[in-house]
Amino acid sequence: MKQYDYVIVGAGLYGACFAYLATKQGKKCLVIEKRPHMGGNLYCEEVEGINVHKYGAHIFHTSDRRVWDFMNSLVEFNHYVNAPIANYNGRLYNLPFNMNTFYALWGVITPQQAKEKIQQQKEDAGISAPRNLEEQAISLVGSDIYRILVKDYTEKQWGRKCSELPASIIRRLPVRFTFDNNYFNDIYQGIPIGGYNKVFEKLLDGVDLKLNTDFFADREYYTSLADRLVYTGPIDQFYDYRFGKLEYRTVRFEQEVLDTDNYQGVAVMNFTDANTPFTRIIEHKHFEFGTQEKTVISKEFSSEWGEDSEPYYPINNDANNLLYLKYKALADKESEVIFGGRLAEYKYYDMHHVVAQVLNRKEFQLL
Image (cartoon, rainbow, N blue to C red; front, side, top):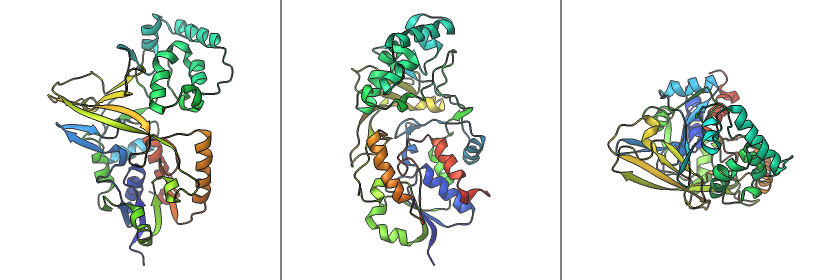
């Protein structure tokens, strides 16, 4: 008899949701996590009474009522709406691109005027079939918005010229011809009241959890403990990088406590010029409408991933996608291993996608 039904590698969102639902079915789970905390990149640290998103801003949003109800069954969410600001050489613009943005750029006051301006710039660019991110962005929003709000920010974030990046990165960028600063189009959005740690405390309540534990330090032992393995780490590492390493971008944070109650007036400010070395500043208290006397900010610096840093954004170019498919072909043959989540599937999922994946697994359809 094995000690567990599942050994789950990773205490992030996929692993914790899987453990929660399996435990509700009467299954016994062991979750092992190499970091000193649960929650993966959603982990929050309390500083000056503020829940600091240690691994960058995370706003939960979805149009899937089942996913929203599931998350709210764990913890109550507030009514935070993501409305970031872009700072280009000291000039401020609303994001996503909307009528407030178009007015600030061109002085246009009607949707028709904005559409005509963008259409003229698209025609001037002469792009019929976008081949890369630069051409895709210009064909969507024209040359002015691309130059001021897309180009430098994107090249800082990815460390590559926009002309070298795939068009798919920019296709989901919201563009709307209303005075609506809500970044997301989803029906539901918010932040867990008290921070994301509250979610994971509920998800992993009653589950055996081992922190500071590296699965690969004793892989054979941990695999022997259960009938099945749930793996949420990098898929190439699982197979000892036999085909080579997949590439990622990572993020470095510089955190400061400031002796002011309000530094920038918004939770997320993107710096879209080339001269500013960081991509954005997060002021964490605004996620939960904080009234503390001090504030905490994090500056985000994007760089190439190395083994001493956390992998954040898969670089889904043709070479990496082909490499991933080689690993996926091996994974598809595994009968006793479940691969799930951002790293195991080499895809940058939003949080609601991860939750839906777990809820929709055949093991949990009767819940």
